[in-house]
Length: 75
Image 1 (cartoon, rainbow, N blue to C red):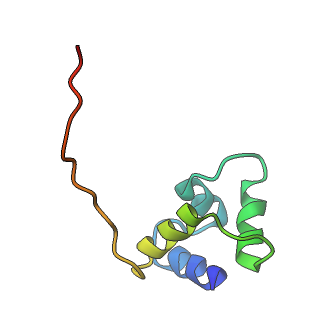
Image 2 (cartoon, rainbow, N blue to C red):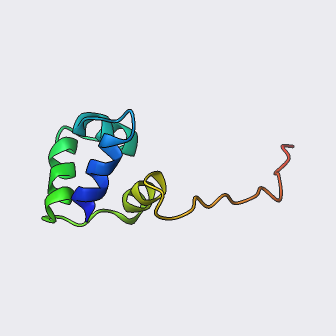
């Protein structure tokens, strides 16, 4: 499923390569593209935040926007 959703994202957005998807997801490190491939293959489990971002971007869940209800004032 992860592979299909990432491929859908790549086909229907400006993020057309794994490198672009890695950058958009905010994955860090020298092996970020390798990690993305391991998520797509099912070898490793996607972190929840990354999975949620993919679901929102592909229209599978609504984006939750939490209203700001208080501000902290400085001294």
